[in-house]
Amino acid sequence: MSAVNWHDVAVTSRNEQDEPHDEQRPPSSSAGALAAVALLEEVRGDLGAAALPLALPDVEQARRDAAGAVAQLDDYILPRYRRLDAPLLAVVGGSTGAGKSTLVNALVGHPVTRSGAIRPTTRQPILLHHPSEAAWFEGQRVLPSLSRIRGYVASSPVPASRAGAVPDAGAMSSLVLVADPAVPAGIAVLDAPDVDSISDDNRKLAAQLLAAADLWIFVTTANRYADAVPWKLLLDAASRDIMVAVVLDRVPPGAEREVSEDLRSLLDREGLDAAQLFMIPETTLDPLGMLPAGAVLPVRTWLGELAADAAGRSEIARRTLNGTVRALAGRVAAVAQAAREQEAAADNLEAAAVSAYHDAAGRILDATRDGALLRGEVLARWQDFVGTGEFFRALEQNVGRFRDRMGAFFRGEPPPAVRVEAAIETGLQAVIIDEAANAAEDTDQRWRTDPAGRQLLGTADLSGTTPGFEDRAAAEIRAWQEALMELIRTEGQGKRTQARWLSFGINGLGAALMIVVFSMTAGLTGLEVGVAGGTAVVGQRLLEAVFGEDAVRRMAEKAREDLHARCQRLLEEERQKFLTRLPERDERAPQTLAAHADALVRLADAA
Image 1 (cartoon, one colour):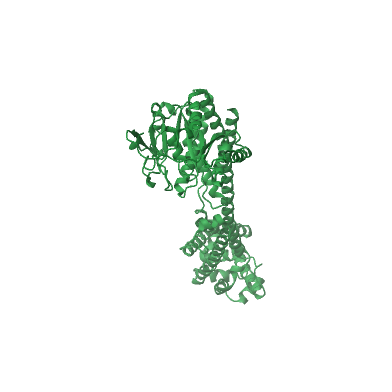
Image 2: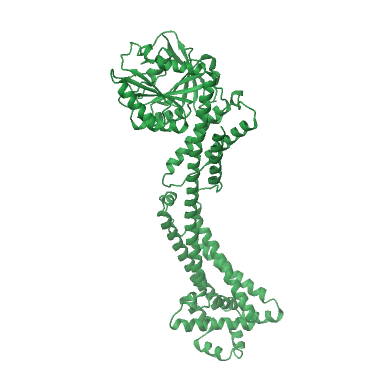
């Protein structure tokens, strides 16, 4: 009998791997083999980069699928594809208390891994291999995310309750390597944690180890073989076409036939008719916690025969690898679909924000051309500027006769013109702020009705305008007014025209042009229609007298377009507070992943 002691061999993370050794290169230099490895590496990279950040239904499962696929590529598919001649990895898994560690100890003939009543017993996975095959496992060829700890066999016997590594939750990220001549060359045996452990980390590690297996030795008991958790993993094995051996432990005397027939029918029904079935009778362990040697002789013989058959091992490796690649294609296709759903959800959220702010820009534009801005303060300041209602009537009767009077009135750019500009700025600013706030509230509400939008917004309240928006709006309006004045200067470059607009004053003409820009009266009712209508006529007649009818129409249209463009820019900047919350996206990712899934199916078919 002997005990196992432990010392560190290497601690190598996935991001700190050495340069590839010979065993990491493809076993064949054929173009097909190299292309297959290149494809798998590309799939691994794109899966690792797949972003599924939005909180959509079933996204957690898609994230697990992506992470699991990446891990399986690293842990099993790529290492096995590179070296089909590497030893097979037989992972011993099963339910809590099923007797996995006791079986492993029995297979090598002495305690090497801890067993007992305390749960979970196996916290740190132990990989047993023949001494001549240590190089296959000491590097990061398989399970590269787990650091290595070297265990060695000591001479003094230790009971199974104290064998192996001391249970240590902090050692979950390491793999204990034990070289033991009792393990046949060609097959390594890995004692995994419980698949239904009370520890989340234990369950995740067990699933990772089983996904890295060439074959499974699944241990269950006569009274727990129908439990749901083990069967979920067995169904996964069926989907991978992996070789499975089911060890039915602690079978009561006289129940062998009944239990084995029921279990066999379950296996056949779930597509596992090729699974090997072994039974271990209920028996008393010896003082070291060991099963009688004869109890596991059929399992040991089966493993020995597999190890001795190089062609058979190669066939098992190819079969499992091919089935795993085919199953991987399904997982990649599922991730591709999830990525498409992410794209659609992000597009919907973006469209909601764009639509809300586009509608706001449209409402601002409507307000600038339906006469609505000619109410209240703007109308009062314009009337102060151009005179009384009698002035309007006189102008209607004989524009030419009053042109000199208007020129004298406007000459010297009196302060009332500036007050018109200020009133327009105030009124227009109020409209822009109000519509920006409406767009923000609309977008906020639409996002919060969507699970992905709610997640992106969190506790932030974006239903109003951002700080400083009022000042930015006012500055943009003033810039528009300055551009409008420059438009008048440019249009009045001719000497004759220049004399006219100089006689009226640049501010007076600017105020008149703003009034013409806002001259449509569809939004006014009652007395306002007549007043505002007269207001617009004064401005338009004045400008036509200076620049001509075509020039006035052209200037008004250009000024309106400039104002609309400036308002759009303001609102586009505002909506960024929503759009910047959307995750960065690779719009090609769904198509790329779907193409990978198809390529993996073709690779499996070719194999």
